[in-house]
Image (cartoon, rainbow, N blue to C red; front, side, top):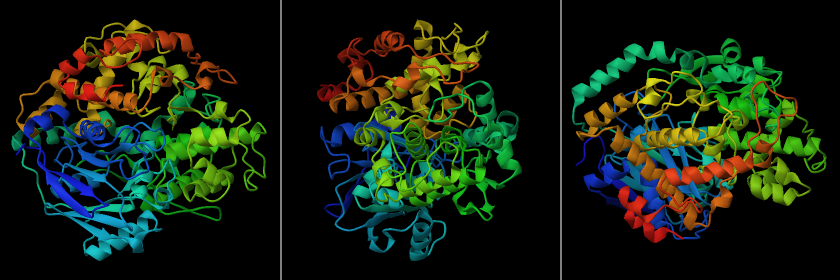
Amino acid sequence: MVKGYAGRILHVDLSANKTWVEEPPETFYRRYLGGNGFIAYYLLNEVPKGADPLGPENRLIFANGTFTGNPIAGAGRSMVGAKSPLTGGYGEADVGGFFGAEMKLAGFDAIVVKGVAESPVYLYLHDGEAEIRPADHLWGMTTLDTQNAIQSELGDSRVRLAMIGPAGEKLVRTACVINDLRHAAGRCGIGAVMGSKKLKAVAARGRGPVEVANPEKLRELARWMVEHWKEKAWNLHDTGTDGGLIDLHEAGQLPTRNFQDGQFEGAQKITGTTMRDTILTGREGCYACPIRCKRVVKVDDADYKVDPIYGGPEYETVGSFGSNCGVDDLRAIAKAHELCNAYGADTISTGMAVSFAMECYEKGILTKEDTGGLDLRFGNGEAMVELTRRICLREPGLGDLLAEGPVIAAKKIGKGAEAYAIHVKGQPFPMHECRTRHGQALGYAVSPTGADHMHNFWDGSLDKEPLSEEMRSLGIYTPVPQTVLNADKVRAYTFVVNWQWLHNHLGNCMFVPWTRDQMVDIVRALTGWETNQWEMMKAGERGVTLARIFNLREGFTRKDDVLPWRMNTPFVSGSVNEKPVDPEVLDEHLSLFYGMMGWDETTGVPKLATLHELDIAWAAAHLP
């Protein structure tokens, strides 16, 4: 058995009510590593071309990485994937917490689910075994009630859950999978796929540990992070990911009023420092991590009640429900966050749906009759919270419409509403402004999951001289301004993003400040492989290429690698650091990126030689 892993992949056929276990060879683990690698492999091999994302032929894949469940900081991450009901293409969401670790300790590296249960069920994983249990009594419950009920039923408060709430059950296309109440696999609408299969939850109880090749080396690395994290990541602990919001505002990079602007006059009221000094009651973390960057907030006043059991909003949530909706009330933002975690909806996509509706309302495309009486002007925190609730529960009217995602909703609204739906391939933008970062703009355009910041490029790393040793060690030597897209920027993007994809193969949190050399050392200590940065980066490249092939097979073309109209327009009030993204310049450098990846420069189809070079020639059978 390969060390560092459980060595077993669980297959579940809900239509036939049966399970079986696959034990792949070591070469499978080394080639695909885990996470995105496993998801891309099984989606291509098991989901038929043209399958309905909400039908029985789609696969729902829970996938751990190499790090996941091992005693090392950052090892709380796991991934969930499927054909996305939001984009119709490759779908994947990554998530922290404890469920992924518990799943590996229970004996499984991944779960591949197909079919549809006759009535609601949940999976129970323990001691290398899997049980399909009835969940009719859980259907309709919030995530908190679901967790309490399953832990009580199993008689074990240490059982960890990945679950859906009512949003997933009602097939909200932006529904997510919630782990441990406070951690969300948010993007791509994976929760709707789980709901379509009538799978309410996966419960795991592990009694590991996983055998590793060099436990002393692993302990040495773990001790290093325990001793050094404060000097490298204290701000994450102190003010969380929202701590950088004020810097984004000052730099003109804070999405505001549905990406119309890059600066928000109420920014100071919603930053991480303000949260710390007002509604924060505690800090939590993920499995084996000392940084504890997760927020825990409480509100109890005449306007809002927010239960700290659901944690608290991170930057993406504050940006989407805050500045991007023109709302400067942290209490309202915290309430919207609580609703999304309780009902199981992506805070980014839900906040973007609200900001889209607000702009349509202000432009007269939507009226009060359309909104069910809501005054959807930017800045109305009460209306933002109420519309969030309606979307999560698919209430008739605007809530039900927006639950269909930006493409369907904008088309049904008509009257030019499509111009105000800010998305790529159907996935709403995260809270990062690419008119100030043109390498990131390229990343949004080419991402196989639609607009995504986690497997993307941060132009600031290339906008200084001398470049960091981390950049130079990848062979990147030439600084490029943030609002420039040229050959040097594309080359840097290609190298850096192939490594970024690797994090979601390894199950490593990007916020934990491991160096690339340390990440290699961790993999060596876990597995005993004499691996190196080159081999690991190739695994990332292999994963993104397989995801590309999946999208091509499903009908995506070069025409889908584009940005929304708004990114080619200036901010309405100007900015200190903003330049529209010229679509002709983007298109020119799209060809250059394709070529650097070993894809056809015109179509973006991976070349056969590239597939052989990546040792995935089998995937050629799936090319259009």
